[in-house]
Length: 208
Image 1: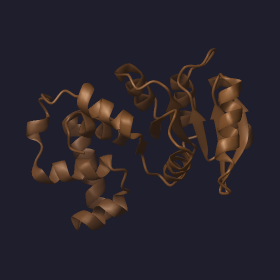
Image 2: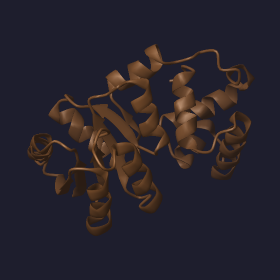
Image 3: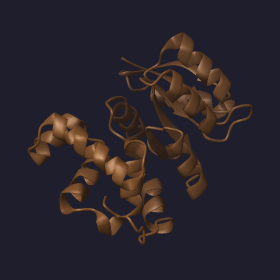
Image 4: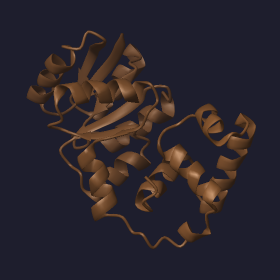
């Protein structure tokens, strides 16, 4: 059973989402929150598998809440569910550590699948969000792009697809240790801190 917390400042939305989501017998809503502070407290008391996080909330918005939750409860996944797909909101969510980003209005089955995939460790981006990043806000002139070797580009693509080191090792016929070292080298080469930044870079430079 997947336990989730719904964070949204609109009570109608919270209750509606709870009703919709719990139609899937594999998912249980263990708490609802009207802002990021309550969502954080529920993470401490309920230990959910995932928080379904709105971005625009009073007192503590989705970006700040995501950052606090991912810092203090790194095993809890955060899936952003919002009406906004503008560059600033998407960037804030990803830089805060969100594990996925989908837009409100997604159908019931796709939302359930997004929750399950995110809990399994697969980074999920709704089609509209992905296309917004790729087509509207992408700069394809990044000076670092041309410096990557074919193998580095392959590694970057696999990281952006959410594959684990073991899965990447199998696809590239490398050892787990070599993959870890290569990812560290890639992070250093691109002056980045983590896999999320690599994923954003891959999207911005049209690798996926």
